[in-house]
Image (cartoon, rainbow, N blue to C red):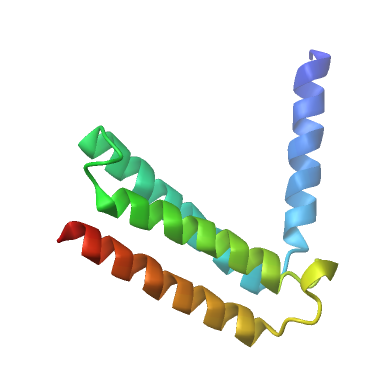
Length: 108
């Protein structure tokens, strides 16, 4: 077996092992991010242009906001240790509301 294949398998195994220790709430946020990115890719493939689809902006913006939520809720992140998870979720919901109001305004 080539060394590169062995290294790749070791990397995948170590990532899988580390991700198994990830809290459930972070895994749920990860699934939401994957869903938003997958939806954005489908929209990009369907419309072949990012400017013609406000739905694309909605998906990408939602994914970015969800990543921000994940960063703030992660207990291992010391930068947001004083921020309660409820406050982070409230920020996420309010920012999503503003994002979607702007997108609705863009639709006309």
